[in-house]
Image (cartoon, rainbow, N blue to C red; front, side, top):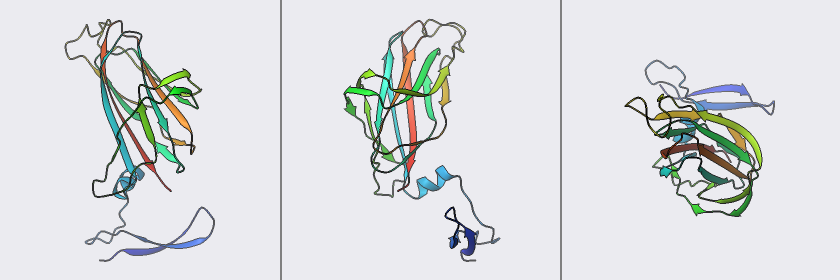
Length: 195
């Protein structure tokens, strides 16, 4: 069975005919979550990294600068060797130095599209900007102090929700270690761009 043509009303309140994917055996219309569809379309990007040692009370900062295309920023995944971490998301920080430009990857390895979002580690920031969102990774190990307590250790958390970021704007993610000792921190960011 071939694809199916359907008529639908668009957000501009005009009628459009769209071709949708149909299952070749049952004829059922195939749907996918937006993130999944954007990866297939070559518009989904990811950046991940690790801070091997984040001292107690120290803050890790990630600067994101959007280009001309709106960015759909999804929840971040943070993994720490011990909890009690405060995570903030800010808009329009005051930047003294960008830091190191990081390499993001298109999650569709067949696509040649590249992200318009630039992400920097270790920026120098003189003011955080407007706080948009707060997240928290609790000390679930029961020991505090940088890894004591249960033997398995570590916490992983999805932090935040979706944000549609303004074009040509800077954003800041900060993670502050309040565990009582040094920790390791891993992070993964995912976003897609529609332009």
